[in-house]
Length: 271
Picture (cartoon, one colour):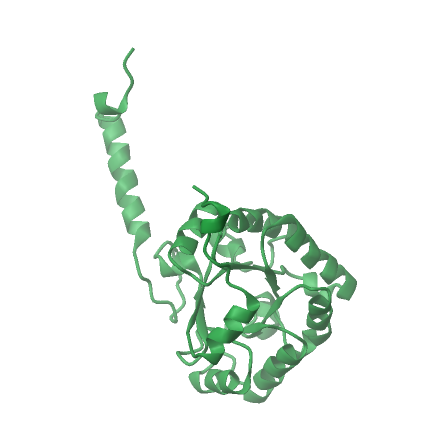
C-alpha cells in the first residue's frame, strides 16, 4: 500500500549520492525489472534501482543485452518507477540508442523520463560518449556513465573479459565526469585500477566485479538472490538460493494437486 505523501521517505537524489561519496558512505544498487521486486528492494533500503538492459538475458532469455528495445525498457521502467518511493531509479539506454546521434539520444532519454517515474539514465561509454553525456545533462537529464567491460560492446571486446588498460579506463572515467555524469559504473576491472579511478574522481564510482574500494556496489538481483540458472559470474556472492526454494514449493504443489489434497476445505468456499 502506498504511503501518504507526508509520510513518504526522502527520495535518493544526485546531491545525496555525491554527499555519500564525500562522507565515505557506501552506495547500494541492484537491478529491478518489475513492480513486486522493486517494491521489496526499495523497502529494504537499496539506494539505487537500475532497470538494466540485463533484462534481455535474465528476463527475456537472450544470450546478451543487445536485443532489448527502448519500448521494452520503458515498459519495465514504468513498473519499477511506480514501486520505488525512496530509491533513485536509473534506466539503461539500450543498444544502440546512444550511438544514433545526440538529438535522437536526447529524445529517447526524454521519453524515459516522461513516460516513467524514473530519475536518470545510464549509458555505456566514456571519452567516446562525452558529447552525448554533455547533451543529455544539458537537457536536464541526469546521466550515470559506465566504463570497463561494456556488455553492449561484447562483440567488439571479444567476450566478457576483465579490462586492464589503466590509461584508457582513466581517460574514459575522467571524460564522463567532465561531461557532467553524476556517477559511474566500473565493471570487471582489477582492484588496483578501480581504486585509482575512485580516488581520482569526485563523482561516485559503483563497482561490479571491480573490488571493494569503489564508492558503491551493484549486482544483478537475480544473481544475488540465487534466481539465476546456469552461469553466474565469479564476482557474484549469492545471498540466497531462491531457485531451490521455488523448485521445492512448486514440486510440492504439483504433488498436492495430483494427489487430490489441494485445494482442501480450508482453501475452498462453501455456499
